[in-house]
Image (tube, rainbow, N blue to C red; front, side):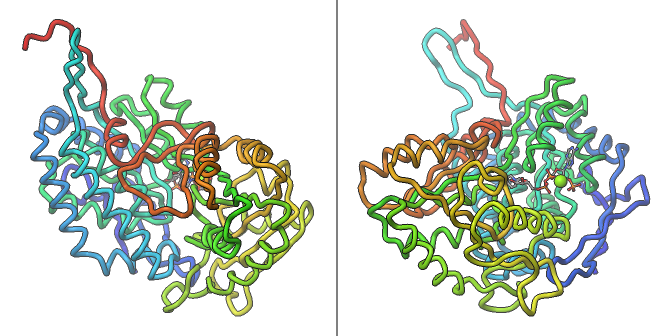
Length: 474
Ligand code: NAP
Ligand code: MG
């Protein structure tokens, strides 16, 4: 049992001013794996005060100092690789291989890439008639989701350190332990006291407190659209800047010259990776009508190569959903899908032999039309939908007929068509033929998928204000 009931404030682990705790549940066993404190507004005030106190010095730290801190964090992070992998497997339910290859690596990548981006980042630019200076925005409040425990936290923290912005982090209460490891690593890296603070607790107390706090200048949030809306409303009271990373319902367009087996593998990988709890996952698969049957057969053939089961067992590709709530939500979408579309694989209930743990059956719907609930709403589980199209224009219309715009995918051979699709999908990140993710590339959404960008130099920009100086002596 991990009983970690303290908050990290001003460089120290301190007791909460309240006595309530939150149980953290291992979703594969349904057992309580540890406890955290349910923080109070008083705890939050202390953390914000610490951040505010260090702001003048931290925001004036040099580029070299910040790069050194980021490098030190990278070294400290690497030393705790095995522990990170185990912690994320237990708190999130990610298979050990996914915890290592996806979660561990993404967190690490953000710190090392922020250091790299900072090397050449321009904080001052002479534009002839005026000079543009980029200065720390102030104290930042960070609120994160559970689905990528190190990625969500690290991208925000790395950008904030690069920009010299002290932070108060409230990690998701479902997955707090990897974030608490980061606090220890950041402390050991020599980052000044007060520049990184972590307060655990519920969204309704600490999250709400962050977004409405008078001494917080910027809020960076990752999570659901409904909470994003509340955060904007709270932030409006003090005209606080917000960055929101919200949901998605991303299209994957399979071109008529695509290798159908490869396209099916990609579609299945999107629904199975991290048990489909990926905001940028492709969950609307658009195939030419002429390839529909072939594509369905290929999906059925490839699915068994993504075995579902105990995330601590070798060879498992997909673990449970993060919580009972999430399991119930996914079940209700599968029920809706069974009414509106054709069930190709899966369905409601738990997979055979996996009655304990929040496991869901990998589920594929076909004959889906874009106005169905399962094509419009984010399910956040191992569920995908197959839609058909007859012309590329029609495919693009369907792809863009959504309130979201986080990501888009295209698979095929013709370079002209690939370029055309990449430029016409209205979304913040497009991936052609399963290209690798470059950590320097900005991440964020159009439309209701969010506001702002994370990762690399675009991520750093969020934590800065822009000042124009006219008549600057040279
Ligand atoms: P959620 O409720 O929005 O939770 C996200 C975070 O916000 C948690 O730390 C949560 O605290 C906190 N929170 C809850 N209520 C709050 C409030 N009133 N004020 C401030 N903070 C509050 O997320 P969810 O419903 O569990 O997760 C699923 C959604 O997140 C999906 O729709 C998915 O698309 C989206 N998502 C987006 C991205 C992206 O980058 N675009 C990435 C991943 C997921 P607790 O500790 O109490 O939960
Ligand atoms: Mg929620």
